[in-house]
Length: 454
Image 1 (cartoon, rainbow, N blue to C red):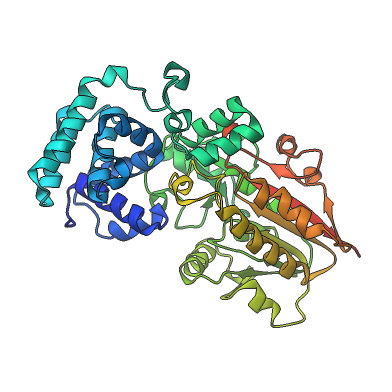
Image 2: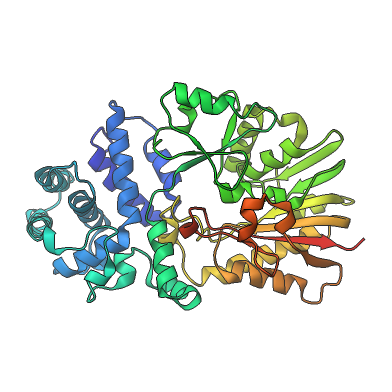
């Protein structure tokens, strides 16, 4: 399919590439939409269509499986994605006329040179779905009203993931987590340290953007109705804020008060927690941020520059093992925000649920254990190591800590509770671990605080 200003065509092309290559959806969106639409409304429509289809993929496929005489898995990606896009417009985009949803879907297949029988096949399915719309479950509707439909399909989650959550949480809480995953999360900002916290809300209000204080993190602002580009928000270029969910904002404080000496962010990524740590450094404090991936390293550098934190942070373009290879490094505190499945942040990245398999968890665990062992060797006596993931799964969280500490005599679990704001201490269990879930209005995070013997 050719690129152009047709948002539906672009949406189908983006979805086809995402399905074919298995890349993160955000990355595919950026690359495919590098040339902006002439009308910004077309970009918003394309984005809403792409993310809507991915968010409700399991639900759409459950319906199509009942209406299509040909199995979905045997269809060409172009046909499959066109059907999903057309159906989502019928079921999930109230402002789109049914005639436009159907006719435009059929037309883009004709433009792509698809045979008449196939365009007729797609046209027939969409028109039948539209005729029987009242009998179909709605996105986010009560699954109890459709007992003969697979619940995991109506909740738009993979069967394996839904089954895991039912076993661990019970059916009611598992369903609540799935429903929270299917609601687009609000944009959360962390007001940069050292700035007057009251300035940013005033500037947002003057721009007509509603912002309210977060519930748990003292520097959090919630923008419930904002769906525009982050870079156009007042104060962005001046470095007044960083985009960061409240749960993520609660991880760095678990390190405790920072003093003079050297600290390490072992998996810096784009720098959300890096910049938060850097803002807490006193005079005489140093922070090294490790990031081996070139694209993320460049974005980390941009964030440090924008927030005015270059002088406080030394970036290391390599792996943690390569940093350890320099020898003699000892740190008072180390943050290991480990690469993980990301199954706690599905509401922000709806493609994660479809890009993961249950077998991936053991692979992530092996990498997480390796990072902890490398980091522990660089932790100074009496130092603190904070381990974190944005996952709900025990294999990446409790089991990692258990296996890491098995036979370990130098480190022990230290309770997270006292280092968190009072309102956030409810997220710490009797085992001292920090846990949040999407049904609580937060991204799903896990964190453990480990202390090394003096």
